[in-house]
Image (tube, rainbow, N blue to C red; front, side, top):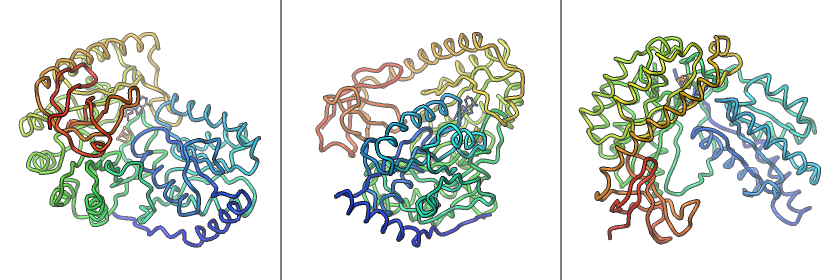
Length: 465
Ligand code: 5AD
Ligand code: SF4
């Protein structure tokens, strides 16, 4: 069922505009907001909304926390490491607050949707002014106003009713790549995963809202649009249409653009979806299909609701319909109870499927999830397994990338690369990174690149005019 609400923060925005205007008059320049993002693309998309709301409240966005009057740290909780990183950065902001006592620090997102983390912040980070979880994201102006008007710290408890807020302003980082959330939350409760606890139950945006957003993006010149959801295959359950229907509708939009989506759950990925992709004009022949483990015993303990045979069948169907499809996956190493034999099953299926890209993670116990209570695997064993998995995937990816040498492929140019501004980078249809020489005017455009070198992680070439 849909649970749409319309974002209407106008009364708070107006009050905050008054507040930022008086700050501007005092300081001689508009107050600034710095948004820092940890975690997945969903968080990146959420941060674009935080930025959009901050801009509407009268803040100028900035990229140095030292310049900021408002800092929003959008946190991740997927693994312990992500939480520790966010906490350590928040720790560093203590001295900023000491220098500028009027600075407001907000910590939001998945980490603070957990009560024990809110308590940590309350007691160990007294200079943090405001916390709110992902389900309260659209209430940012209201909560900030509460903080300012009552002049006290605000720790927003988790929402009891989850909604889909439409109309939240978005300040996009790019003017040619866009993230579009199509659903929020997750109902799957994989036994290792914190997401269902911190992002709440599944709820989907209505199809006409998503179509209108994508249509507008294409009209504004966006070239690469990724639809986001924790499990896009269960989009719009109970609403009379499904994810494949949404893709069919979006594919009808005229223009030169690529559509992608993440993430798919193998238990719900349908032949219908693969048929729609194979017959589409705009949908990238790219599939991210998290496997997690190649052992049926571990998949069961993970509560994944599919087995190796079902997974291999979807892969077979994808490759039958789209022989050129780039396949990627997620693997967790060291899930509780994983024996050498279970791990060998994972190695074997990787060897069979031969993914183009693999995101591998060492299992991290998450407080409150069933797997955290199970018997844990020795970390030395896990480390060794992880290294073997990386080595195997390195060889597979190299072997998959080598045949690209000599081919001319279409790449969306992202501009100068991070490590060497002389060399530009971009992404091809399968989402592989490509390096090449280009000029500033190529940024945000499709270019044809003739590949002359490939390794396990990237392709290199020159533009063919
Ligand atoms: N430990 C390690 N990896 C995890 N993932 C999710 N939860 C955990 C955890 N507790 C991985 C899964 C998922 C990806 C986004 O993160 O592989 O697909
Ligand atoms: Fe986590 Fe599983 Fe939901 Fe993905 S499908 S977000 S792994 S619970």
